[in-house]
Length: 284
Image 1 (cartoon, rainbow, N blue to C red):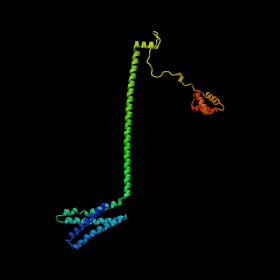
Image 2: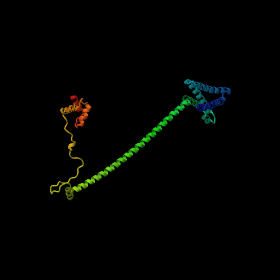
Image 3: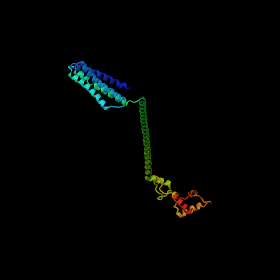
Image 4: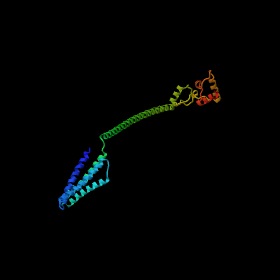
């Protein structure tokens, strides 16, 4: 995996060093003896390469030195400056030399990228664990989306069914109300008709001129209280105590509160649980 970033950096470094050495020898060779120009070029490339090697050694140990990095970038800037100066003084090919003047800086940038790659590199097991976690998260998200879609579809179906049922109920109620209104209108017409009223009156009561009651429309719901369903008068405390005491001592040994309450209510008497228990406490 390191070869993806190391090989481009090595290739760019080699090209930059060769280009810098060639430019220094050609440029300075016209002013000084070529061995001197060669020494200058090798000095620039050697310093560049030495700082790079030291940076790589520190990186392998997990360390970093800002001073070494600054020296390395200084040699890179020097090499780039030499290439730019040569391009500006060259005759007829300044553009071509300027086009390659950035190679030393590019090589330093590639080594910087390679160092960042190494600092963030993970082992295959860690990468596998990360992929597993990501896949699990994607699976959970997909399941959650599917569940939400299913719940939404179910809710939509339920609302549609409820709406349709409500519409059917409303239609049935409307038809029923219309039918009842028609029946009521028919009864009203029958009651209002003089001949029909006398005929119905003769059917429902004894025929007596000027005495038979007028036939009236039926009334929906009860209008009179039913005596049998009316609640009886409430017992006073003295009457309630007497009943509780008589029921309690109706059997030997005396009945418990639960048995007494059952017999009290079975006899048709009524009293709240609070009053009945209070009466029990008074007589027991």
